[in-house]
Amino acid sequence: MRRLVPDGLDELVLLGAHCDDIAIGAGGTVLTICRARPGIRVRALVLSGAGTDREAEERKALDAFCPAADLEVTVLDLPDGRLPHHWQWAKEALESFRRSCEPDLVLCGHRADDHQDHRELARLVPTVFRDHLALGYEILKAEPDLAQPPLLWPLSQEAVDDKIRLLHEHYPSQTGRTWFDDEAFRGLARIRGVQAGVRYAEGFHPTRLLVGV
Image 1 (cartoon, rainbow, N blue to C red):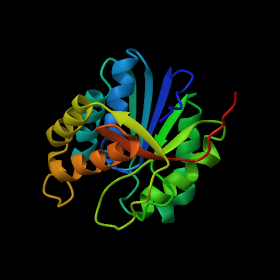
Image 2 (tube, helix red, strand yellow):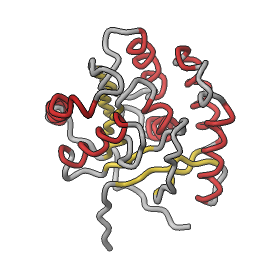
Image 3 (cartoon, rainbow, N blue to C red):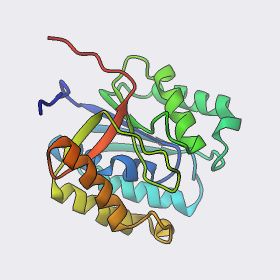
């Protein structure tokens, strides 16, 4: 299977509606990118969790998932599950964040996610990051919304092992949830790996791709 390789990655933007979205949906990919490009500029925006234990978890987690990166994390205080009712606030927050960065790649949620916060943030992304490559990660949870992602990012076994270890290490508040376990994380990565012709992968839904000769 032929690979579409980005020209270069000097700046990466990570967007999440909640603390842990980024790490669950794209943790293996983020680890892979940051290990391959020491010193890469990473800017992360999370819309909810500010001032809570979840913010502390997120900051430590993203620091671990972005080794040797030039990392800045912003966590805001949107009420969990209420993004559709705070659409204007979220749009303004995203636009303000956009003025602080010029990414080569944006990782965010995707527009078919059944969780309203994930979905609405994903819908805002192409209205703000208009000329950027934006890939929507998938999050396995109780809602039956998994769709076949057309873009697959191969992962090494080390990246998958480290992703699962870091998720458990840095998000103790989530370990009681039925979907937060090794089998769920590794199982989805294995399925995407089978589809990619490798051992493991993470799946993404692009907003749009520009190709050329």
